[in-house]
Image (cartoon, rainbow, N blue to C red; front, side, top):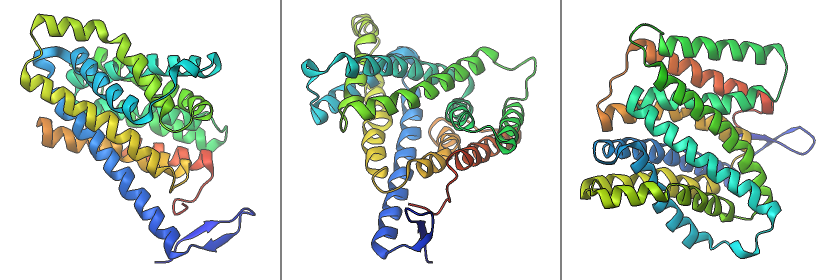
Length: 302
């Protein structure tokens, strides 16, 4: 199959085999990143009975900071305030985003929590344009959420609200990451932000350590979550973005809710109802359409 990309004048040109290979490599890397992230979230949930969501996040941030700081070796003492303030805000956002996700997973399940959290990137995409198609996407997203949740007397509205708060944090994470990426090279920004998040969770780490609740299985599950949800995705996403355009990256990563639902089934035994699958499908499709409209890209580009 021949693939095409636009040149600097907007005209289509046939891609070389090397370019197609790079795109395929990027797709495989993004898929691996998504699978790693969602399986890690499911594995981390197994530690909830021992240390709770906050304990899992604390250990996860400790592992992520240790690995990223060793890999990036950011010269923290040389950072200017212009570089520090977005890193500090990003670290705080990561801290809140992760605890929202894990508490939501505990209350409403992995698939539903991750799908609702994806409303954050969707909101970012919708704010980039004001066309009628974007308005239609917003309506479809609302329909998707309603079908997914089907509000009723038995609905966990607190869990849904916490997942929505996680979505807001993810939107802030995207915006702050852009600023950090422009001001700090490579993995220095994520490493500094993860350090900030780890420091915020130090009291939790100390508490679960001295309380003796951090059993060997809980530690193993939490460390696995740190590697699979933070270390591997950070590195994989950095590699993927060297091969595909950021807009296409955003579209393709919309598969995460689907991967989360599958991970919930396989790792946690959480079986979704038909309406939940339909809601996930609508939100994933809406998210992809909104990003395509915002970036005005063609899915086959690289």
